[in-house]
Length: 263
Ligand code: PGA
Image (cartoon, rainbow, N blue to C red; front, side):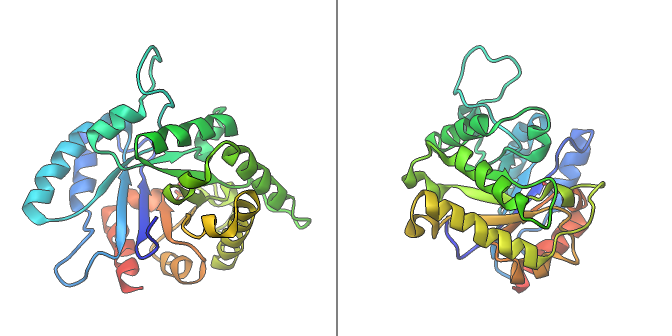
């Protein structure tokens, strides 16, 4: 990925309950205003059921106001078409103009998604030129550093079989599970995020080489809010943020985007 721009991803999860509400949030997002230039790729990941209508809406909006919001999905299947009841393919997403897909979110892993499935989904995205945002993260921290070996194994299992040439097309989101959602133990600190960004790159450079890792974008996700976004971007060692709850409130999400523009 290009490191000159940050990436700010909104993960709406299974919200909101109606398209009317989804459109209201989407239309209130301001990825650009007249004064400041866009310094981030803004990616909105709504539930699948709203993607098509938001893609239509987005194209009219782009013409009118020259704003730019990328659409992302929260998951994808690894086959392009066929008898896979309930699944959504990378080809279908690509044909809608979807540019990013979150893969291996901890809430999907909790439902049984394995590192092998995550790997197949990444390969499918690469094939259809969609940027995978691959989530990794431990569910607890311990003083003896077992969380580090957990992340190492996660990355090794996911990336075995991913060619070096694909690396620059992949974004990794570090999402410590203990810092995600309403039941988060606490927020992570920018120091912790920075440490993990370095560690993730180290594991990847052991698997590939240092040069290949230079262009891998790393995001932080987990209880990102208007107060901590700036610190994560400044001192968290990351190229962007993955925002859950605060992305459903367009005012707060716009605040986060403003923080990015001021960095
Ligand atoms: P949160 O979710 O910001 O609500 O903690 C982040 C995520 O799970 O991607």
